Image (cartoon, rainbow, N blue to C red; front, side):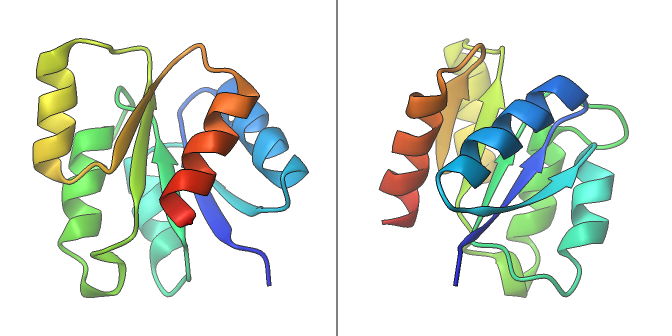
Length: 121
């Protein structure tokens, strides 16, 4: 069975690119438009990994990570930030919240696949 990855980004074009890249590599993808939408879609779903943007309306990436980490069912799901932010302070904030990894946009599809393979093993 294919591993399921959730892509969370308020940019439709980024979600499309992430989804296209991951599906092309054999993964199933659930898309969410922001952190709030992601939490609603996570409810009862089995997700092997989450790829999320940092800056989003309603609930940003850091808020989403904290909420996911507080949910027993998804506490250990790997979460990779996919964002334009590259400052160390932001990375540290992400790490403190529980992010597993960090990819800076614009990203190369093969870079995303490499990270996913590394994280999911």
